[in-house]
Length: 160
Image (cartoon, rainbow, N blue to C red; front, side):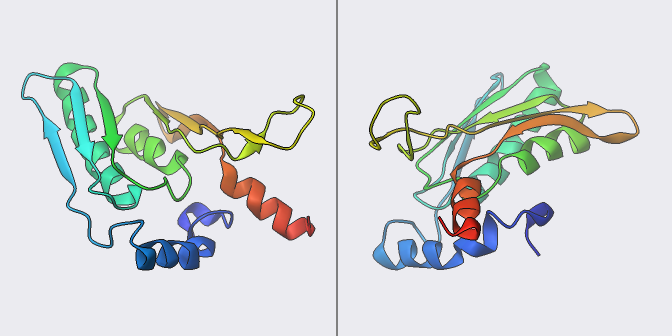
């Protein structure tokens, strides 16, 4: 089953990910390294050239620990290839499991044409963002701006 039932991401990307690994564009077994200075609120994660899943997991665990110790924390993830899915589950877990307000942003290559540019040149990334906040006795509140995967999914199902 897809993560939280969203079919625009996840399993529909398996062939694409396998091709990227075969080409050597993505590390199949990345050596992820997490660095946190003991008195710092900054978590740094080097994704080892792999997909973002493992780096996101490492960052979420480390940033939760740092935030619970210091009251606030930020994580920076580098050297990964693609978020490869929705951002919301990561921030929702930080809110649900640790009681933290969480914001996650990611940059992307240019996937979209500017709406009023008068041509179809792709110049904008989707720059996804997700946030979540804990709510007593309920699922976290949050907002998600979903990324290129949904646009691709919607285009393919509409025959565009």
